[in-house]
Amino acid sequence: MISCEKAAIICNKTQYDEASFMEKLKLRYHLFMCKTCSAFTKKNTEFTTLCQKANLQSLSEAEKLKMKEQLQGKH
Image (cartoon, rainbow, N blue to C red; front, side, top):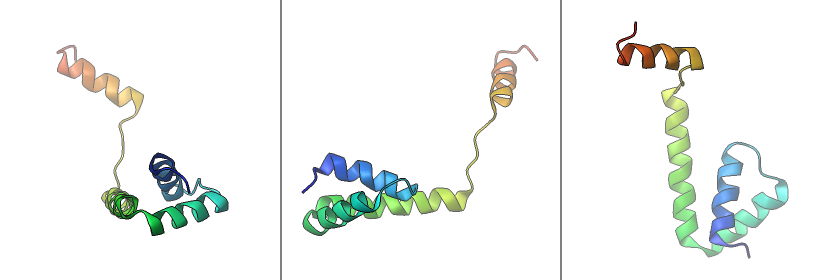
């Protein structure tokens, strides 16, 4: 069985479609045996879903620089 640390890594990879079939299989077995990781996976999935629904976006580097200059009063 994989460690809880490895399970958390695979959980994150799975949510971004980066986990292999074998990793997913190992994760499922671990989650069946470990209720703590099972709860973590459930919360992590809920968080990812909420972030996707929120349609979060980050500022571009140019926007960050402009904001920094404005905050420093350099318009």
